[in-house]
Image (cartoon, rainbow, N blue to C red; front, side):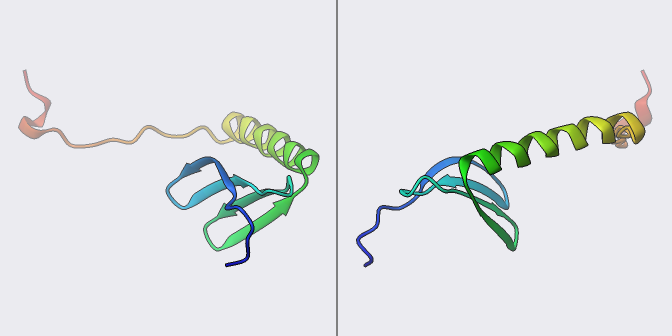
Length: 75
């Protein structure tokens, strides 16, 4: 045991996790990639990603997921 407290989980989704270390460093885990960021760097990264997603939604809108319903949609 290292004697260090475990990082505090801030948010998670399948394959993704964001934690706050005891030293104040934000740990971002995305699949096989991990970042250790100072809080201000994490805020800048988050803002940049959000701006990119807004732009992506404008230039390449998501198509709705279509599924076949039982009964062929009659009635």
